[in-house]
Length: 414
Image (tube, rainbow, N blue to C red; front, side):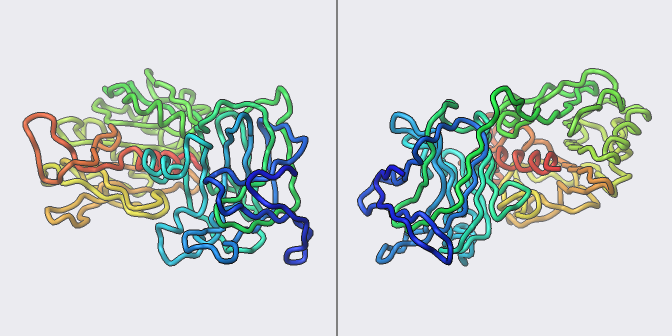
């Protein structure tokens, strides 16, 4: 091991032989680590058991930060770490910050929270000073963190900030941390091994829809899926190989054969996202959308009374990690399924559900939305509810991007 702003020692911790790594008190954030000699790593899997806790005598801001840095080169590196004292904190916001991806020196936790709140952090149950199984899978610009031997990642990063390159790996600790590592295993990806193919999303364009908004391309890149424009009739053959069918604002009639193909697709385990707006844009009876979702216990209403720029709230739950503020300016109620997003009333309180989800017996997933502003990524941080201007209205609802990321993440996670 080659120490960098840390002191090292061989010890026995909780009955296991381990490397003890103690961060230097005066080290800049992100720069305390022990380089593992003779490691050359670009892509692959890194596994280790680790335990981090605040060192003796440190201040209240210490979290026991501990993890792995990789692709070290020229004073730069990527790293994914845990904050063990956050895992069971009484403050939910702290819990949501139990894991973190950062890139040194240009993309630290403060910048990520400012530019992309919650995108590079997540919750996982942790305890300070307790041995924890830690595993990261890295492939190009993508990384997945697995904790406690779980089958599903607790943190997904689809846009690592540095250009993929070979470099050493390091045992990483943050300010004020006393850390222990044992059982390090590094499995480089075999040269020439193929990466997993991105999931395919069939975006229907055959029923009067506009092309997808430009920001969908960013969403697809971050979510590791591929958008396929569907310009012909929807058939079982056309949907073959797709993970998700996206029907965004159709205004032309779905033929009975198409409806049956969609229902069969979901019943076979495919996912469906249906977004409809007001009657003046998409006539419910003409489109026949309720025939598609009725087999899954869902139904869209006609227009409900419009409250201009009233906004909506998506509640924390199975789909959204935290409450999300999204735009809303007239739409429909969704009946059935499990509601998760609600139009706000004039007093700012959740009222009618405008989005709900359901699952088919085979694992297919369905989300139905009765208003389309979030799917266009509208809404701004300085929007003011109930305020409408003749031009350039600042729509209330600042979280459209992360809201849609989480909807797609849920629909594709199977």
